[in-house]
Amino acid sequence: MKRVGEVMGAVVTRVDKLEVHDVPDGYIVYHSERDCVHYLNTTAAVIFEFCDGEREPDEIVARVAKAFDLAPSAHEQIRAGLDSLLKEGLIQSSK
Image 1 (tube, one colour):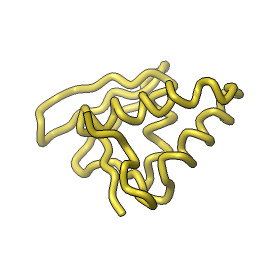
Image 2 (cartoon, rainbow, N blue to C red):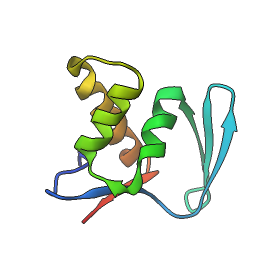
Image 3 (spheres, rainbow, N blue to C red):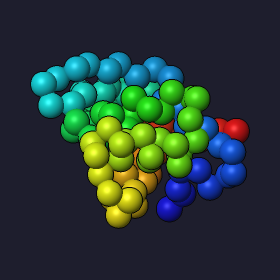
Image 4 (cartoon, rainbow, N blue to C red):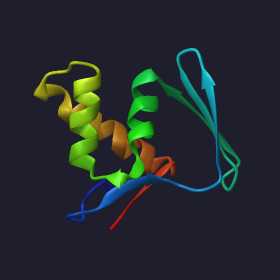
């Protein structure tokens, strides 16, 4: 499976044509090109927010860990969250 940030210096951004709706415990995201609805829990929503085209995957992981006061041992789980968003077609990695 392709992983976010396999290219050095790559930044992560949300794909176009997403409708994002706040719900009490995260986001509901409609991907119009795929005609698919995704539910993002609070953690996934925070990861998604940091995918703004300004940050590399390692910085996103560090910021999410800091936001939730998580130990470095959680970094792989946060990276798995990034990879899941990539797999679902909600984010993309570009240089």
